[in-house]
Image (cartoon, rainbow, N blue to C red; front, side, top):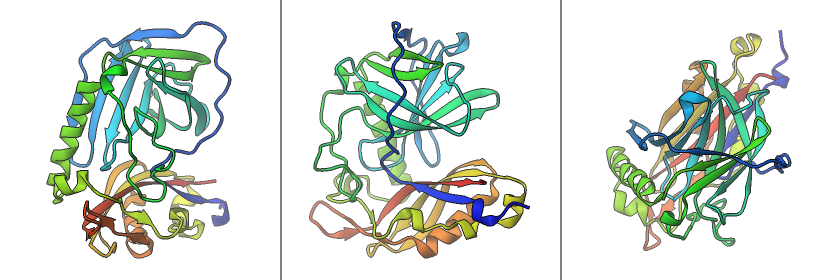
Length: 292
C-alpha cells in the first residue's frame, strides 16, 4: 500500500501558477477561424462560453467559465492539438494582437479520448499592478473588449495557434449577464456583488486548509485522484455557512470530504460592499487531490 505521506492535497485560488513557458515555435502560427456561433451555457453553478475553432477537423474549442464577481474567467483548451502527456505543462496565452504573453501552468486531462488543458484564471485585460487580486481586492481590469479579436496559445503540439475569435465585447457581455443571473439564483444581490469594495480573502494560506493526512486511505491505495471546484457561502463575519461542489473529476468521493474539511478549517475575512460594510458573499476555489 502506498504511504499516505506521498499524497498531496492542493488548493488553487484566483491567480494561476506562473511558470516560464517553453520557447515559441520558429515557424508561423497556425491560424484557425471560429467555425460556429459562440455557445453560452447557463449551468447551475457556473456560466460557460464555448467557441469552436474547427474542432471537428483537428482544431480546438475554447471554454470560458465564470464563477467569481471580478472580471476573471477560467480558460480551458479542448482538442487534439493539446499534448496531454503528464499531469501539467507550461503554456503561453495572449489576448489580442497587442497583448502581452502570459505564462500559465496548465492542468492536463481528457474528456473521453479528447485532450484538455485547464489554464486556470485569466482576464482579457491585464490586472493593475497594485491590485493583483491575491489579497482579496477586486481584480480591476480596463479596456474595450471589442479590440480583442484573437487569442494566441502555445505550445500546442509544439506550435503556436492563433484563434480568430472576432470582437469579444458581445461574448463577454453575455457572460457577465449570465453571471448576474446566476448570482441572484444563488441567493445574493447581484448589484452588491458587482460593486464589492473587497472580495472575501483568506486569513490563512488555502494550501493549509487540507493536509496529506486527510487523503482517504482506500482511495490512496487505489491510486485515485480527483479535482474538486467548490463555492463556500460566507456570512457577514466571513464564517462558512454552506459549501457546494461545482465540478467533480474522476472520484466523486472527494466532494463530500472536501466540503466537510473546508467548512471547519477555511479562515476567510468577509467581503466589503461599496460603502465598506461587511456583507454576505461567496468564495470560489479548487482542490486537487493527487495520489503521489
